[in-house]
Figure 1 (cartoon, chains in turn blue, yellow):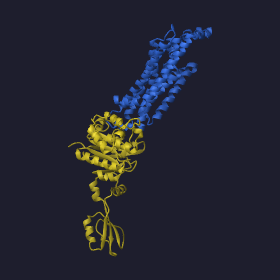
Figure 2 (cartoon, rainbow over the protein chains, first blue to last red; figure 1 turned 120 degrees about the horizontal axis):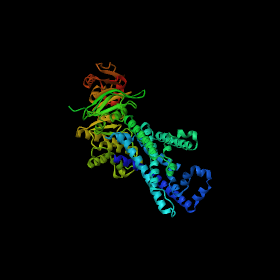
Figure 3 (cartoon, each protein chain N blue to C red; figure 1 turned 90 degrees about the vertical axis):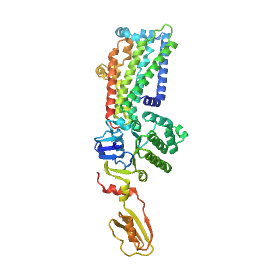
Figure 4 (cartoon, rainbow over the protein chains, first blue to last red; figure 1 turned 180 degrees about the vertical axis):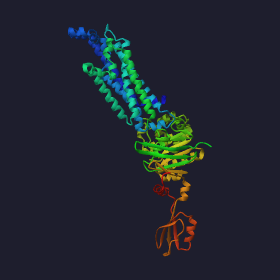
Length: 267
Length: 303
C-alpha cells in the first residue's frame, strides 16, 4: 500500500506544492489586508456606513464579519479557494480512471494486489494531500497573524480555524469521493474530472443562488456547499455537527460506490 | 498429478453484443511453451486479460495452477509474470525506478543476480536505467517490459506479443532466454504472437483462435508432420510423361522441365519415383507455420 501511495504522491508532488504555495500566499495576503483595515480603522468606518435598520436586523453577523478576526480567515470559504481545493481533490481521486486509460492498471493488478487497494490508495492520497493543503493554510494564517496582526486586534480562535478547515476538507472530500466513484465507472480520466468538476461548479452556483434568492433556497440543500457556510461558522450560527455529518455521509457513500464498482468492472 | 498451468473451461466474454472469446476450453501443461495465435481482434488479449482477472468472464472459468482466476485471483497472479501487449510506463520514472516499483508490488523477491543477467541479456545499460522512461524508444520500453516480466522467476509467463518493436538481435536474445528458462525448470510460457517464426522457434504447442473461438490446439511437431511438403523438381531434359500419382501427392504446376509437387506422403516414396527421371535439381521448401495456419484458419471449425 505504501508503495502505491508513494508512487501516486510522487506524480502530484509539484502540482500539490504549487497549489500549497498559492494558498499559503493567499492566506498571508488576506491577513495583511485585514491588518491594514484594522490599523486604519476601516472596519469601524465600514460598520458605521451600514444603515441602522440593517444593523438591527443582522447586527451580530455584520459586525462579526466586518472585523479583523473574521476577515483574517475569509480565505477558507472564498469561492476561488473552495473551488480550487475541490477541483484538486477531484483530480487526485480520478487516478484509477487514468490508470485504466494508460494501461498501468494491467501492470499493477497483474501482480498479487487486490483491486480494492487502488481505491484505498486514492482515498488516502486525496485525504493526505488535502489535509496537507489545509494544514499549510492554517500554518500560513498563524504565521500571518503572528507577524502582521496589529497590537490589540482580536484574533480568530483556533476552534474557528479548525472548523473552517474541517468544513473545507469535507467539501473537498465529498467531491473527491464523487470523482472516485465516477472514476470507477469511467475508462478515461478526463471523463471523470469533467463530469464531477462541472457538477461541483454547478452545485456551488446553486448554493449561491439559493442563498440570495428565496425560491431557490430549498434546492440549495442538495448542494454539499450548503453544508459549509463560512459566514455562519464565523457568527456561530452553523450547526457544525449536522453539516459535517451530512458531508461525511456523502463522502462515505461516494467511496462505497467506488469500492463496489471497481471490484466488479472490467478494467 | 499437478494441476495444469492454465486451464479454461467454456471461457466466454462478451462486450455487449461483440464476442471477445466464446466457449474457450484450453489446457496448458506445466513446462509447456504454448503459442496462442490468431489475427488482430481474434480474442488473444481478451483471453490473457481474463486469466489476469482484469476482465470478468460472461461465462466459464479459468484457472492458473489450480487457482481460479476470479475467486482466487491473488493466488493465481502470484504465479504469473506478465508482459502486456502495449507496455505502459510512468514517463517521469527512470528505468531503474520503474523496475524497483514493480518489484516492490510483487511478493516474489527479485534476485539482483537475476536482474543483472537480464540486463546483460537484453543489453540494458546503467545509462539506460538512469534515463527517464519518457525518453525511451519503443524497443527500449519493450526490453524493460520483458525484464519486469522475467525478473521474479514466476512459474507462469504470460507474454502478449513479446517481440513487438525489438530488433533482430533482441528477438534472438529473447528466444534464447525463453529456451534457457524452459530448460532450467518447470516454467510455463503462454505466448501470444503474430510473429510465426518466433512461435515456430519456441513453442511446443500452438492454439489458434479465430473470431473469439478456439479453432485448434496441436503440438507443433504434429503440425510439422501433417504439413504438406512442397518439392520443386527441375529436369535436365524434357519430361513428357505423367507426374507419378500416389496418395497424398498433388501437382501444383508443371511443364516439360519443371514440376512443383505438394505431398503429404513420406518424401522417400516420392523421391524413389523420381529416380527414373532426368532430375537436375530438387528443392524442398522449409516447413512454414504460416502456410499451415492459413490453411487451418480456412478449414477448421471451432472446437
